[in-house]
Image 1 (cartoon, one colour):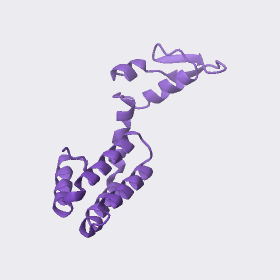
Image 2 (spheres, rainbow, N blue to C red):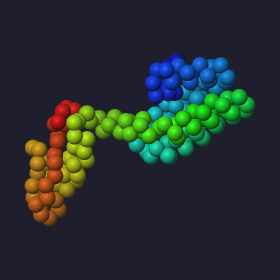
Image 3 (cartoon, rainbow, N blue to C red):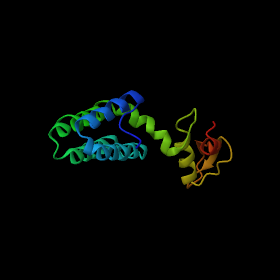
Length: 148
């Protein structure tokens, strides 16, 4: 079974060992909470929302185990609340599948498309519902190929 709790190899190793040692019968439950948390971050469903769901999931997974509920569930919850900002922000590009040097490219391209602009280059003029001459940065190559 692959282990998904932790933001890097060291933390994954430490968290798996702690859960295996203190509550081996709850290992799958903890791992499922971590998978759901990762998916929530990738969906950019709100860091506080994702962390709240994660903490509730851990409490449920640890329910009935004194040591696991008191230590691992609380520690995992505290760690994501304290240090989850970086991983949450880092997960944003994965949902857009964009690997661009200009991070707002996807936003402007989608905005231009929603306004009815023809984005066949890097700039579109005179678009929008009234065609009032607004200029939007368009980057379709970026969105498709991951290039600028």
